[in-house]
Length: 328
Image (cartoon, rainbow, N blue to C red; front, side):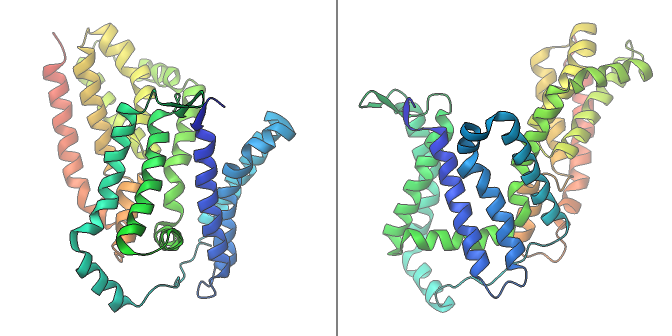
């Protein structure tokens, strides 16, 4: 260990909070699916808390198999609709509203403190040492700073409201219940993106394009790249995961090398095309499903339905912009 706030410590913190959520879910008799809900969050927490121990005792291969089984179990619980929502213990609702009115805009300070503290630590604490150890993990500087900022925000919120950090854990459980399986989707999609990159999916896409598209047809290549970015983002839920695959398969060999497109303009518009896909997919859960859950909309896909016309219009504009702007 070469830092006080290491990435491992961050994982333990995440796992610890998830394990507390699992225990609270098990104990909540108002949740008709409390056992399966608790098991879901227990499995999620398990790999964070005991991953290093499994690596040390069982080795990489066995650990990877165990984690793979955990992922399948988590997917099975979510797919079978076995996640429920309880009614966590909370203070009297009128008292909460009265407290919010008294505190006013001070309630926003903890939320604002998170980005401010993260930026300050990233800029000014990256070389800070204590007893020969770096204060923040040098390989994961931003994530370590964000974790410190979140912990600081919890204590600031406790100071402002007069509550305890335990109240924040209970409130997080209520938020976790509202978001459900969607909370895990970004992590799962990041893993899937790694699989696609390792499998050289970009080369396969390049071969397919060679079979069906004339390499000299500049407009067709632009359309395929923009549509491919949008569609692959809809599958992956994240334009950053789709970008290396589609750029390696289409943009680089055909548009940049073949037609001498401006790389900076090309990939910028290509990424924007991917964002159009983000607006049209439930896989981008943090953008489309979580807001619907938090707002308690009857139709959980209502956000997506409203965004689709705008997304298609912007995608069409991106195709025209790319065709007319990126080539010499």
